Amino acid sequence: MNNRIYLSLAHMSEQGYEQKYVKEAFDTNWVVPLGPNVTAFEELLKSYLGGEKEVVVLSAGTAAIHLGLILLGVQPGDEVICQSFTFCASANPITYLGATPVFVDSESDTWNISPVLLEKAIVDRIAKTGKKPKAIIPVHLYGMPAKMDEIIAVADKYQIPILEDAAEALGSCYKGAYCGTLGKVAALSFNGNKMITTSGGGALICSSEERKREAMFYATQARENFPYYQHEKIGYNYRMSNVCAGIGRGQMEVLEEHIAHHKHIHQLYQKAFESVDGISLQVNPNHDFDSNFWLSTILIDENKTGVNYETLRVELDKRNIETRPLWKPLHLQPIFSSAPAYVDGTSERLFHQGLCLPSGPCVSDEDVNFIVDSIAEIMGVRS
Ligand SMILES: *Cc1c(COP(=O)(O)O)cnc(C)c1O
Figure (cartoon, rainbow, N blue to C red):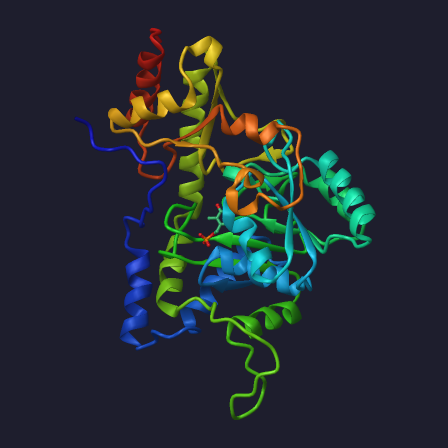
């Protein structure tokens, strides 16, 4: 039996860059939050993203979304619009603040928030509550950039700020600009399965030194500037440790390699599935979109392939290949069943047709061949 092929495993550089920076932290006894690795990692991310934005590295991507919402002034009783087709961490922080998520469905090109439904939702929320939603959270799902021009046009029309969830989209570009630099604030994730990892971590991207200071203030227990501990606001313990930042600093050296590998794997799938009727790989809709293809994803037309997504998943699992259904839309999650939702069935249809395929740095060309052959075999067709 072959070794198990996973969706997206963490991958440390062969050169051992990560260990070098972690060792440095130990050698200098700098094993607390804040420190040279934190500063260097933030600087590397800042310059990678073009140098215009400020970056605060944190303990998780979820923490970045939470603090981003605080910077946008979200308060108890507010409503925040969130893409429904995403991981729960996009929306959970809305509820941490006592605000209510309002879910909006996706459009079928990028699978991300529909600009048309977004405007409908805003108009209807204003009519029903007399109040504008406080923020909009589009997500660049699986690395695919959302239709940002159209989303920004709607957001500007109603003067509502955007928090980009770019957790899966480090290195993805929309019209030549990096995902994470297009909203007022944005979140990245360095969880173990993401494009790069710090074993666990995230980053908040914001637009000025002042906003960065504000984020740091909330991330370090909202300690006021007094010799003793004085607190006038509720804060959080969200800073990244200097040890984890050492891993991140090392991973920055292989970021381009990782992105290139994810794109390469996607290309192999694209070539292989071109001739398979009933399997469609998600691709960039046009040249404005440059996905990092964090995960390659397919839709399965059961009428043509004779198998549904669940049968295919179970059969691939028997062959030691890990796949996963697409995100279950949040408006269908029991925990969010009472939240307002503006949907047209798109994300629900995607959820019932799609699978994520192994795409990470540990997936080889041979693995892709084996995966594609296995799918063909399960469908009962010769490739
Ligand atoms: C991973 C992820 C997050 C959360 O990041 P963590 O670092 O795991 O807290 C948020 N949104 C999306 C879309 C993600 O995939």
